Amino acid sequence: MELIADILLAAGAMGAGFYCLVLSRRLKRFNDLEKGVGGAVAVLSAQVDDLNKSLLAARHVSDGSSKALDQLTGRAESVAQRLELMMASMHDMPEAPAPEPKPETAAPAAEESDALAAAYEADAEPEVAAEPEPAKPAGLMFVRHNRAQGRVA
Image (cartoon, rainbow, N blue to C red; front, side, top):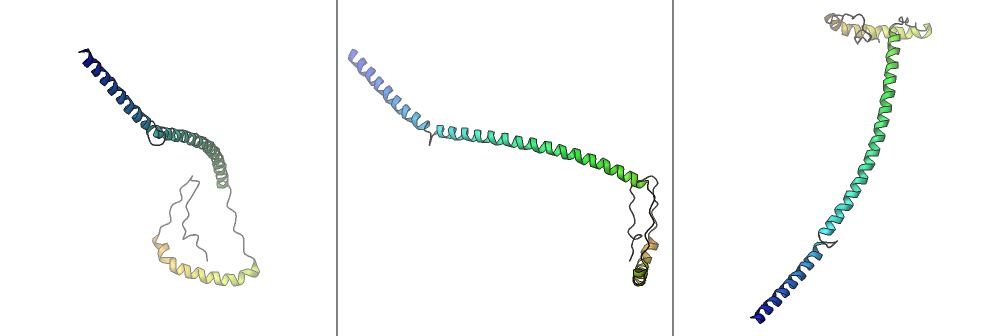
């Protein structure tokens, strides 16, 4: 009976040894850096490092752009304030009289402009009569002008 037990024990040890050999070969293929999971982990690790570098570079660029945009916004606001002050000061100024044309060039041009003005008035008479003059609001700084009023030949 001892002989049978020793044979079974030796067969079990040989089976366990064979099983360990098969497992070690599979584990080597599994951890292979070119084809196995180890290679995939190495590639993913390199990609994570590259993404971290790209993220840091993008963060630096966006911080610089944000600072530049803040500076430009501040400059634009100061220029807008100055423009508002200039427009307010221009609103208080009296209107300047229109300059008179020079007499030597006015004679030929006057005949042509009178003829063109008459033609424009003939075309625009029904439109002008149909449109009532808009009331000018008091106190507004900017006033939209009617284009038909300012039409000159």
